[in-house]
Image (cartoon, rainbow, N blue to C red):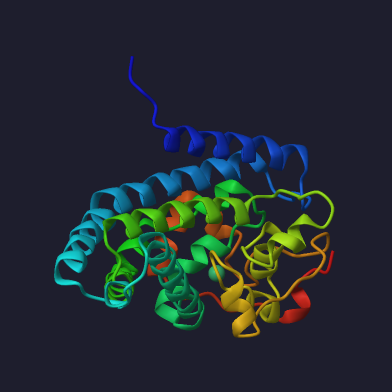
Length: 270
Ligand SMILES: [Zn+2]
């Protein structure tokens, strides 16, 4: 019988546990047809995963191996015990993602692709998969720069990948943590409440909580914002965001002109 690695088992347990938990303790009321929305997100996620596993990760693994042999990048230049070296590498890559995420909102060409992720009118674990496959190619030069500057070797690259995947699934989930645990956890990590604010249609709320891992970066740059979740209007306030939800439209949207933004008073303050 095939052996299941402890890491794969932990990953499957996290996925299953989170899937059950966000149903048992919803954070925000879902407003759109859940099954259709989730199926679309899963379909987009399948395309994304294909590009990541066939192109992005093989390229980055070659780069990470050459970082280690050429002793290139931040981590390779700092003599540290191995666990601290791995933690520093993961943190450096996480910080680079903070800036890249801002760029995906502020540079119109990058927003065309990132918008496909944000038009989801509800959030749950499947929103974490809702990315355009071509987005993974568009972000590849950034990923190459990120891995090179951080000096990530293969172990650091994989440690970051696991941290990033777990974090992205967790903070997109519709899970209401008990008591004040969301606030407490947000002292270190990105939480569902934090990231819910980033998915708000309101510009000043969308322009906050950029981090995808450690909350430190938003604290450092004073971009961390918390607010109650019950009346957040999730999505993008533009003329085509709902029409672009359909799978075919989501795939072609980045190659059409960006839709006109709707006036701020169109955002419902449910
Ligand atoms: Zn975003």
